[in-house]
Image (cartoon, rainbow, N blue to C red; front, side, top):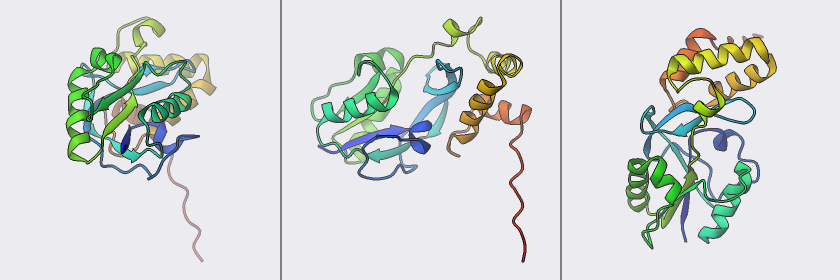
Length: 198
């Protein structure tokens, strides 16, 4: 079975034990993503979100696993999840779609399924987490609320703020969203070190 792994965030620069047959390339489907999740370590994380996301070019790699269950388990371990329920699945051979992904981003699931078929894969898997923004911050998600969250983090936990800002800055160049643009305007990237001349 030829299985695609779709990524747009830390899977690309920190795959850890993710078993890949090919590296990630910017050939994945255009999906609505935004930094609208809040992780347990207080990073604003990139999620598929059909309400707030901006269509961005995602990345795709081929899993080294040839069985869907094996590929799902490998991605579950990489994401530190207790179960595979939050892993999105579009299996072209059976028509199966993961219930959690359908509940959270149904249109994106079909976009991924169409892309999977046209790209020559039998199935695609991806991280399909829910936001947690409203339960981990005092207000609903908006770009302003995301910036306010980062500002409060900078005041209360500078180390966590640095980690959160680094996560935003390390997103691949195809991922351009309102939160990333606003954060870059408020906290510009440090200048690249000048190369020494001979």
